[in-house]
Image 1 (cartoon, helix red, strand yellow):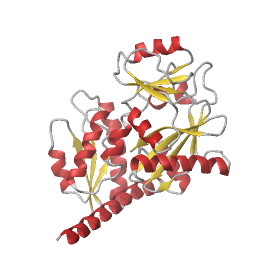
Image 2 (cartoon, helix red, strand yellow):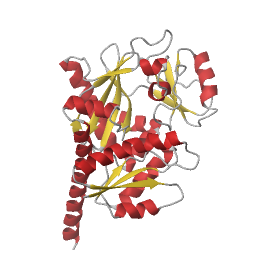
Image 3 (cartoon, rainbow, N blue to C red):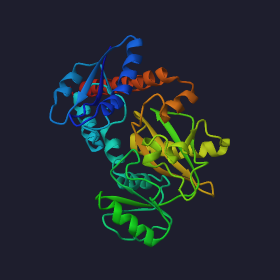
Image 4 (cartoon, rainbow, N blue to C red):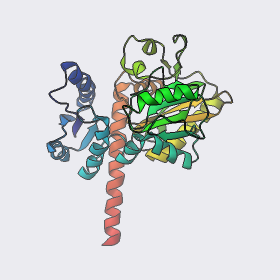
Length: 335
């Protein structure tokens, strides 16, 4: 089988480190596919060149690792929408959930309408205290991912602190989410297709005094920072059976509501003092590196990293087979 590995092609502005950061995971996955007997081709995506689409059309499977174009995450939506037109099976979520989840206020609205517990929120464009949201609150850009725009000042306990924070954030981002901050333990539930992976918990023990226990940009990207060193994933999470069932149940409802249980993703949840789980957000196509959260949950499930990669590929191929069968059936019915 010929597999095209799609990735951000970057630009002349990228440093060698930027290129290496993207290609390391792409090559890691290519090696796994090659070891399984497949032929691979690395296909970079550029903003002003659609040659990658034609190259994808010649593949049997597209392994989509493109998280944006030239580092801009907003273009990920368009890349996946284009893949749907190519009509070759591709890994990960469809364009609809990726587009929706890049707009946190829209995703929250849809989850709430589906009966999924979501903390109260408001979308703001200027420094104002929104009605109907109780303090403390957390402030974050509504159309970013990877914790961009989130730091230790994101949690606000007073109207004055909120106004000060919004003055800073709205100067950079037009759409800003103000959401009730849920005090409590934070969990992640990963999915590959309909399979729920073991629950992971973020251990914030040891975080510096006065720093809110949240997953900031520094926690993900600034190695050696206080947030990096003290936001430790524990998988499987140490929870009782009843709590685990509650967390997985609400995560599955969110996964089904937005992603239709297709592709792979992660649901982030906070458990409040009363034991109520609140969905913070759904992350379609999260980081697939061998040291990232989804791989960690996969290992706890019994899949080593190569097994996880191949399972993601098989899930995409199975969706392709179902789509092909449905299309053939529709053709017979209408002919």
